[in-house]
Structure formats: C-alpha cells, structure tokens
Amino acid sequence: MTTPTTVPNPAAHNSPPCAAATCHRGLRDHELADGQLLCGPCVHLIGVWLQAELPRQITVLEASRQRETTGASAGGRAAHGTAPLPGRDDVLNLLGPAAWTTVHDPYGQAPADQHGAVPITGVLTPWVRTICETRRWNPPQALTPQALAAWLARPHVLNWAARQPWAGDLRDELDALMRTIRAATRLRPRRRPVPQPCPRCDSLTLVATDHQLYTECTDDTCRALFTRAELALAAQLNIAQHGAVCLTKDCTGTTHEIPASRHPTRIHYCTPGAPAAGTAA
Image (tube, rainbow, N blue to C red):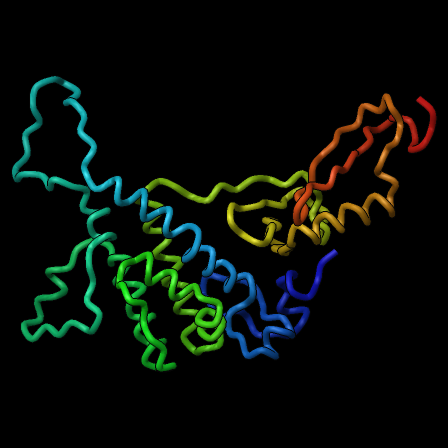
C-alpha cells in the first residue's frame, strides 16, 4: 500500500520528473501544485545532509588532518623525491577556505593552481550568496561550513530553493559533495534490510538508511518509498487480509519488529504446517 507522495512512478501519473539528475522519481500532484521542482524525498534528503550528516562528517575531517604514519614494510626509512605534505591534502582541501565572491584571475593561472576537491565552503557559499541576493535575506553571521549548512537547511530557505530553476543543480552539487566527503572519511550512512515485503511489489527488497525519512524498495522495477508509519499500516493490513498472525502458544513462526513512528509494531509470521490462528496448542 502506498500514498501519492511516496510511489515514484512518473509514467503512470504523466508527471514531470524531479529536477535533480541524480533522482529517478516523479513529482506528485501536491508538489506540482506547490510549484516544486524537487520531489519531497529530495528536499528532505538535502535537509538531512546539511543538518545531520555534514556536521558529523566535518568533525571527523577536522580530526583527520594529519597523515597516518606507519613504519616501512622492509625496515629503514622511506625515500621521497620531495618532502611529503605534513597533512592529508584531500582533507585540507575540503576544510580549506573559499572566497565569498568570484575570484578574477587576470593572468589565467587559476586552473593550474587549483588541485583536488572544492572546499565545503566553496560549494555552499555560492548557493547562500545566490539566495541572499535574490531574496534580500541576511546571510549567516559566520561563514564556516557548519553555519552555511545550517542556514541553507532552514525550512523557509530550503522550501523556496526547491521551487527555483536551479533546484536540481543544488541537489546534484550537494550529492557530489557528500560523496567526496564520504570518500575521505570512509564513513557512510548505514543501510539495513527491512524484514517485510514491499507493499507495492511484494519483494523482500526494502532498505532503510540512517537519518532518512523514507524506506526504499531497491527493486529496479519498483523503487517505491514508504514512511515507517506506512510500513506499519501495510503490515497490519497484511495480517488482517491473510491471517498471518498466529495466537497459538507453541507456534514455531518468527516475529519481526517493524519500525513505526514511536514504538515498533511486532508482526508474527507462521511457518508452513504450524497450527492455525486461534487453535489450541
């Protein structure tokens, strides 16, 4: 069972796709009525990146500035043609400063001087500046990555940005930034299989990801999204329709906990040949 907000099937609804090139979902009717160019899951995911994951990743980056030192495998000292950097260049690039305005290079040497990933502030600052100049909003008082991310994640800022022509570019750039950061920290959101059939395609392909509002079906022909409350309701309906619940004392079935909004829903599935529901043990 799904709701119009979570089943990404743009062909069936004849709706335009989400503006993000890295998203395969279609826009729902309420999103189109609100003028959104990004789907609801993408808007929520941007907020998760900026508010939950990015601050934690920055903490790890700040503790990873120095190179790891290990002894040479064959003993002795390793020889280098040039002296190595005292820190990790990939981390220093990400944590490095970035200009608030466009840098003008009259000598044309900027491309040769730039190496590695764009700093976090270099990705976030242009978006903050674009929004501030367009809406005449005050920028954050500090230009640290944490302050910039918190400012972009404000609900009124994010909701307005989701309706702009460049909303897809914002989502794609932040997606690329998070991938670069995760490659440096080796920390990625944990993905866990959900022990429940997909309410739409009936496949055991549901996956829950840390900090994300939706549980996703990873079947390529489905790709549906469900909230925890929707999965709990689907499980309850499955029990009511198919009698999957067993009330006998000695049944050898298995019990799964389906995450709900506050308390998990316990679902008991009978094994073949077990006593029917409600019969005496």
